[in-house]
Length: 515
Image 1 (cartoon, rainbow, N blue to C red):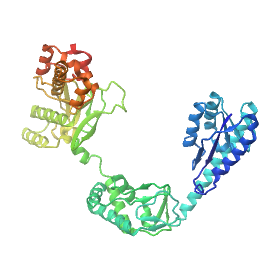
Image 2 (image 1 turned 90 degrees about the vertical axis):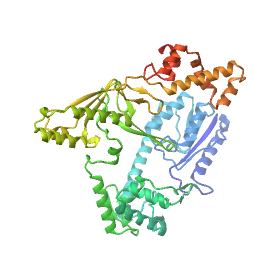
Image 3 (image 1 turned 120 degrees about the horizontal axis):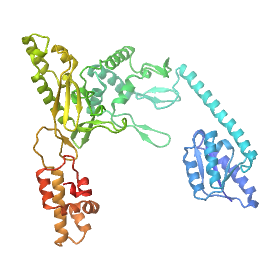
Image 4 (image 1 turned 180 degrees about the vertical axis):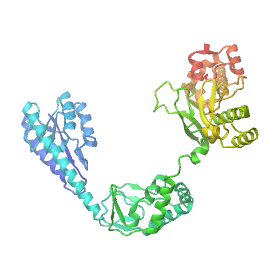
């Protein structure tokens, strides 16, 4: 009977001592196993010690290791000092017992005598665990109450030490170097007006977060500030000598870093920035003028997405497939530049077709107003944009409709023909009926022909040599090599672009007859 000893302690306090709580638990369990030697019990050499882990969860490293060894058939008996060392949760206990039964494993508590193979033993265990869980919950309530009372007295109750302070003997002491940085951040926010601008200023100055050394030997900090961190810092009342607990703020026992006047000014600016009207022209709206107004053919909104590759930025409008159920529509993703260009073209055509007879305004007033409306930014002109496979339906904004004295929103259908132009900018939208060759497909066929020639003419001795020469994998060569066997008529179609605009290399390999 190979026995594993499992030990646990909820906190890491005292674990650095030469003989700690885990050692005491193990010593008692080893003595118990030795007393059962006549029954064939032997102590497993491996250790399963969880120091600093709560019994309210089974996600503990040593317990996970123990479960792995149980499933591998290494362990037949688990020995613990008390049942609550294994778990303090009834639901977790039920999961563990199910695993124990499945693998024929029993467990023993040194200080609590019971047998898990009998119904009475299981009842005893459940009763003991009920009290263990109750004790854990009561302890949690006491700790939370003590925490709240200490906060009300203005005490710092641990956690991440705020920038600008150092941790003394359970108190916060001012870090002169970073206290100056905190003051600079507050002042620069008032001067520059946004956390993003402050972040860029800090980065240009080479100012990094303070380096922190922790008891476990880890080191954090020494990195650039990020925007979210700055917002947390700017709204933390600890810098005016106060302590926050949930929604309440109390006078702290530490020294303030910034003045009350500076704090009030920054909070007013934060509130002002947060309450900006939603319809104002933001940076996002300038980058994506169709945001919130472009939809797929089934009514799903296309969200703006940005992809960065090296120094190049690619903008797209895309249906969020994690939020919606299929079908998603005829077109679900397209380059932002193409969508905006064709939308602007459609709006230009729409406005040019409007006649003074359609308006309630006098002819001269209508013509003057139409010229003014035409000069508005794209996002102010658009009502909605609906994407279809063969057309793009655009409506004029209600505000513009009212200015022009029209009784209903005018609309316009712009014919489009999606064309594939490579991996990154997948589609372009054009009303040009002339086909356009797909450079990506043509280059893939040309490469396949080159590989085929080298292999058949003996210029390379193996696929491995060819892959090394081309600096690609053998899998890429074997996958794309069939493209060299396309018929001349099929290659001619590729060169002229006489194929479906969505044709891809994968589609061509799976069904060459598609050409």
